[in-house]
Length: 369
Image (cartoon, rainbow, N blue to C red; front, top):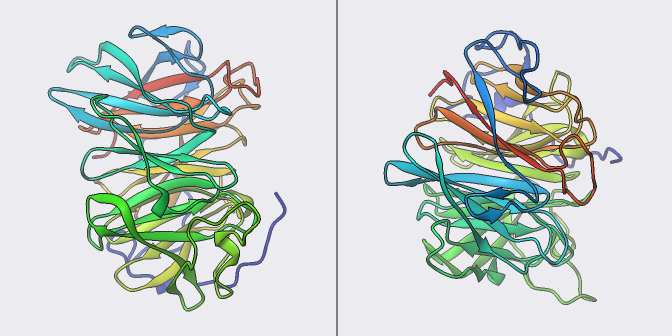
């Protein structure tokens, strides 16, 4: 995508989130896990002490379900002694999301659909009350709140806005949900629900110059009406909003078109970028983090890596997929105990645009927790 100038540029030093208070702009450095070794039998290059396995392939059975094409955003949820990994399907009309249930020993016990009949479900985010927000990356797309445990039907959350949704990140400290928009002039939003834990009503706001938040006058515009990103003239615009992750008072989000990892400090009300595209991380996309304060950013294209960004500002690859340059890495999410990282290659080795070659992986190892 064509690069665009931002209306606001703030150095990382201006920003006072607890994880990054003393950090300089992130730069290339030595990974805390050491260098990547040669690719294993699954085509995954890992540091010493880490192992990979393939848990699902698009169109093939897993846990009694044919795994969906084009696996995208994902998250893990506790399930007794085990856990559940949820994954979106970024295909037209039959998108939705599926879940894989794991026993305590990591074996797969069951897989099932949790959302069906939706359109290009890209990323999303987990809620503190144990649901999955699945986002449609289409014109006037919706956010659907779905149940990872498969007990309740998914519900559209129209009050969260009708636009080209990408990711969502819940901020329980300030009781808002942050939302990214995958447009070349996309915006960064927050949704303030009327009641925390209930997303059927609330106020949609957009980040503006200052930075300050202003209400979006019409969160659900019609096809011929002014879209949300154009309704507030002071709104800041980001080139290709992608992943979104909240931790320690800071919401981190990526903009693929400008290769930036942004950070909005919700306590101080400041905006800065912690990575400006000058290192090993290219095609910044989905993002997640750990309790240790490390961020993990997946690449869309590039050399198909997941890079770590540490609180002291080191950027380094921790996972690489070989022979998959026509794909993208999606859905990184840690198991509840932090020992396993799940993610997908959306199009796998085939590079098929329909995502029929999608592969979902698990990496186990001594992750910093």
